[in-house]
Length: 431
Image (cartoon, rainbow, N blue to C red; front, top):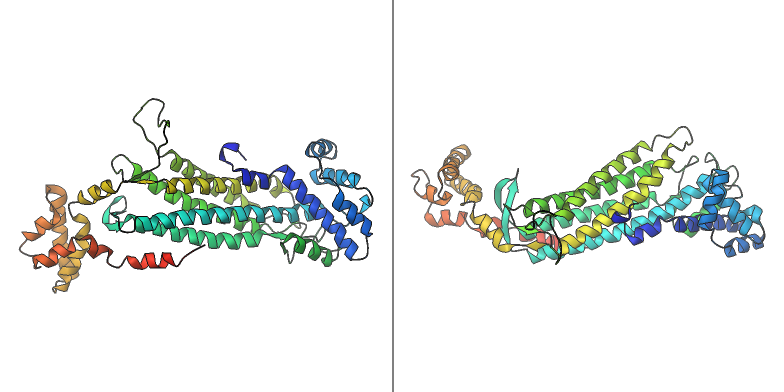
């Protein structure tokens, strides 16, 4: 995890300190489970619970000898207990500890991500209502389309974040699993009751059929959902970048006092945060691809996934947490230029109202194609010769519309008359 793109909370989840603490908790719970089975003495469980956390430096130094991180950990933990060291790691294989602890850490990271998505949703929803009645240009293919409102644009974003949250809830639940089933998942050396005891105390699910590891389709799904949320972030960031273009100027990232947009050009005010998030989304998609590659392991297990997960899981969760936090700040402080929104809408010379005229002409009995060609002809004059669309339509003898009807076609109210339904739905939507 790169410090520049990390958050303290997520870094703490994936720290060696936290990992070793969870490993110790898994080992301790296993000893307690053996006590509950009437196999290990109570003193062994009490000693394991009292044992100090394994020192990170000592663990790394011991790994130089064992060339195995879990074996080094087990050696040090067993040596540190006052009595019953032989019960540490009794009946376990390394992946019983690794994957069960991983289930805990994935759950913790997921809970941080869920909270961050919820925070972003709240900010977007609030700003959506702030600009509910602020007219703006809708664009398709990058070209003027029809009037909308800036709040409606943000409402669309809010609902997407709500869907992202639902998908993430499912993904976090699907990856929060453990297994204490042995080398190939047969429970040959640990009865299922040990697994039940450990996982229930950790608050995670039990893998119903494991091999030596938990199947990696769970992790692939988690990483794919993370990448999907990254795509959502990129969509929002790309829109902000377009709106901040000098020729558009409808919205922009806040620019702090003392900030510099360019080392060479003092006038620059660039959408650097949104550009940064666009790049982060690309990395997250790559991590999702690597997660899918990890699904196809040999037989009951190989470790080709291990090196990949040591990188992509902390990085993917950390990057997304960072990106969600940063986007929340961007939108919370987004500067919306309502004057420029109005100017840009006016600059279309009425072209964006063309469909209302088309439908009104159809109401008079014209065929759709006749009406379309008539409006299109006048629209092309507006594009090529100047003037406004309504001016050209008023002098066209083929336009058989009362002036009041024609004028009504060129009002914002005509286009936003039913948009309140979206805000009614959003008002009832919460996380």
